[in-house]
Length: 136
Image (tube, rainbow, N blue to C red; front, side, top):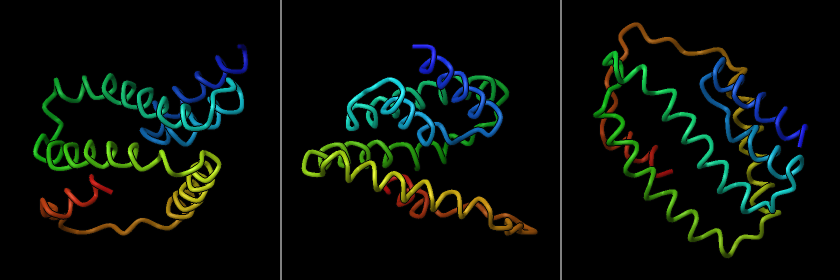
């Protein structure tokens, strides 16, 4: 239990300092420290990180710093993609899901180490591109 509590504190610190990465930390902690089955841990991590993100967004929403257009264009297809992914996961073994999760973690780590491309005049993204990102 102490390991799980320590893991939860580390997740909160990482989300607070970095603003993301919750599932990358939450799934291994739920599987290896708490002892949750792999498929259940993946689903629980969505709820845990989603709740943390919602609570973290409240101060920004109060200050008017959230672009609600992007939230709708990304969020609604994201919910559809999540539902479809959960439906399709019935036919994918949990071990394969954890393996895919590890590949995504490595890809994210690689992309984070690349130097950022800074644009002089950032443009608003087209709704279709945002929709596709949310669905994926």
